Image 1 (cartoon, helix red, strand yellow):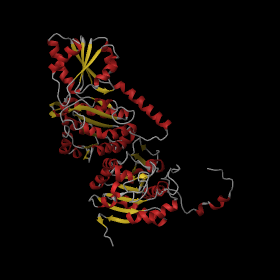
Image 2 (image 1 turned 120 degrees about the horizontal axis):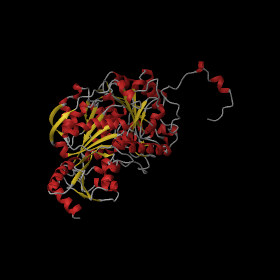
Image 3 (image 1 turned 90 degrees about the horizontal axis):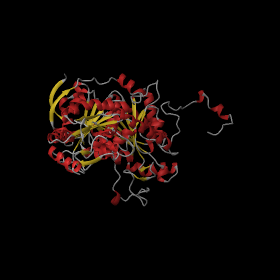
Image 4 (image 1 turned 90 degrees about the vertical axis):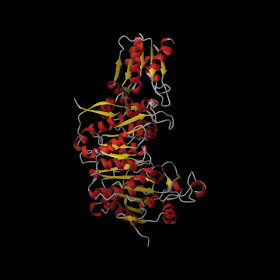
Length: 359
Length: 266
């Protein structure tokens, strides 16, 4: 049993970063995730593990610090919230193009624009469809608890290095701010220079006599070469499907299905209990990885259930991927509150009755 | 290369006649710069210093967006290519991740003094222990000669075709003087590479900058006032003459800050 603590989701990410052998955190304050950098600054990880923490002058600088650090093979991360992540998308695109690993945390608040500091899930498209310019995908994990905020830091780093691409934790203001019990994993030591050179032979660590120089770039002026590069990236994104993660709750006998991730999945868990108390056989499918998306699993449910309700705090973004997965074989509707409002379990059950069962 | 059928050169090119050789830290790739451009010389000087200090295996360079976007093709060291203006942010992280390594950025005026102003100012103000080489030719070269933050008043470019009108387009920025005011900069100096004497002075400054980094002194910032004969629509000799007559009075050569102290004007 690891160390047990009562923590905010944001604090759990910060502690997990130190324990995951992270070499550097570069960030800029923004509500509702500033506890990440506050916790790190207070914790002095430089004294614990040698991890560097720097408050940058902007999110633009933060993400480019990640580019530089990642380009040397180090485990680097940042955290932000929606408007800040929008500023980072240029850099994220460059990192995807240059095939650089890093961990990004988006504690989503409701937009567009400054919007509100209250929770939202309205950055789903931005996270799973690329976000910045160009054809690329991130490895996207959606934590639904403080425990997962901690655990997914470790998984996120693993996946980003496995696929040499940025990984994102797509969280929201609910998960970031709420406090829960969390079992912390045992610390992983930061890698030594020798380990980095061995594991990341592509990294810019200084050209030695026994190898050619290493170059980190996303530029290919020759279109034929760039086409090859983009196609190689596409194969990589396709191969990520082997690491798809999801959770099915009460689905064995389900006639209806909620599909929800993150905090909406927690709300739907309660909605499942409420609906089943009324005799409605509904289950919950929770995608844990949003990219890769559990499309094969959802396709199986398409022939089992009479309808699906995608529940998310947005105008309907996840619902598109659910519809693509079931390919018209069953009815799929969307329900969710926006603007920082959070749907209640009762509202979710009512929506199921109105839009799916009675609709 | 054209076929060389005459053997006359063999009598001249002999080891005993050798007075200069290209540093192995420059690759054999043919430079993409226009004939007459200062970039090639500036590259070579940086490469020579890295060679002379024996730090090739510890040096990481950062190329910008602009004419020198492909600097990594010419310099035989590990390099990263940054998004437009962001090189100082990359350098900050690399140096903090690997404090024992040498990190430098190589940036043009559009990159460093327009889109990357925030990254430049803040890296300088934090006193990151890095070297910034800043090539200022008063124009956006790669995109075809548009107005730069450093374009002189009255100077023509493709986006100031009747000359830079300060009232409409604002003033050129002397970012080198600006960063010299910040406590984090340790060495700030302005040079040119259009004549051998100037190249020697520039080389001395680059040496000092890398020595400063070795001794953890803070940020060294070296501007090279350079030409852009293509963008300026001049021949190479005309461009150099124009530079001396117009750029140097506005961007005077010489040390601005040495050992963390402002150099007092005579």
